[in-house]
Length: 240
Image (cartoon, rainbow, N blue to C red):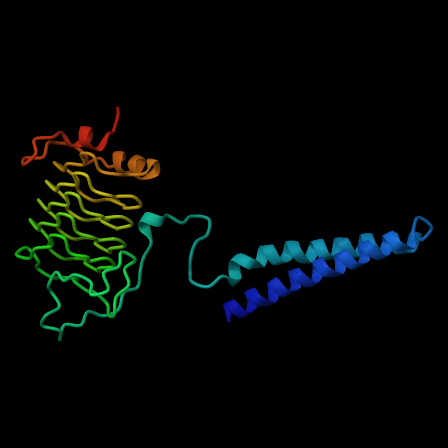
């Protein structure tokens, strides 16, 4: 229903613009002597402006989804996920995408939610688009792996190794990443909202300016990685 209202408003805006243009053209053709036409043009222009202003006020109400437009935080977006298919006995395995694409395209949902994956190996695998919330990936080797667009919130990655991996546009929000290694890792667009980053190593990782600003604001960004011996905050490039 909201989409229909939005469509109607857009049509009204288009009609008002066309009417306003026609009236302006007519007033120019009639010339300076026709005062009534000029008055009518002004009145209709005001009417068009009123309709446009009203439409813009109504537009936020007609938008689909329940979103507070005045206060949207991308790091705190709530996603509605499908139910877990607990009948799939082979679900909790690190598998590489058969399509071999970094755009998260898959023939079926790659769902690792609530899985214990501590004994799995992810080296060089394409796991783009993986849904791995509330799972345990502690100690997993993700070297040279692809995890683009992964939904990995509220999970454990204690001591996980992402060296030379592509981990862009991933949500690690609320996850435990203590002692994790992100050496030479692509992390553009990746978020760490309320995640534990103590003793992590971000040496030579790629982050955009906005990503780095958010990362440096994390109060848990401290300590030293026990495996590489590198200071966490220094490795991320966070300057006091």
